[in-house]
Image (tube, rainbow, N blue to C red; front, side, top):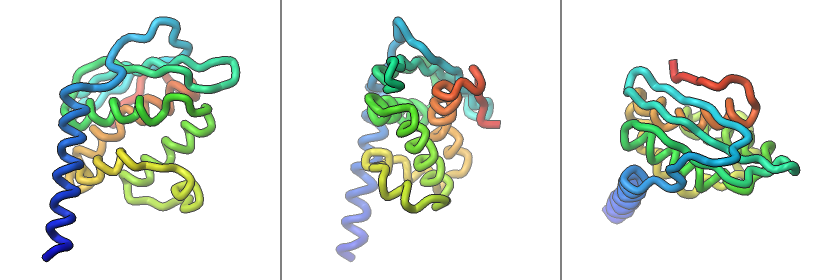
Length: 159
């Protein structure tokens, strides 16, 4: 029984973290001087966000922000993304993207990479895995990040 109580407490903390980031998103603003940007759209849920990134000459993400509308999961994930990615190199951000997507889709493509990346706060999104339609909400900002830093496309969609 004690294990269930601990699990319940952790889930409550995760829910609180998601609610906090959804209601008070970090780095929710436009970004003057952004060097990279992208738009993410989830037509099933109606989520739409714009991600702005400022990458310096050393290929470090100096600043990152987002704007948009969406469900609590989408907004919380974007907020958590901005806190997790700031001050990483483009290479590290790409590794982080791969780890988050693998984590959300229950894939362990590169266990060495996953050991290197600390997903700490992002584990709050783990409960979303129980709702397959919500995984797209949780990963939207991450796909927008990948598109922006690699300049593969301005607009990405979950479909």
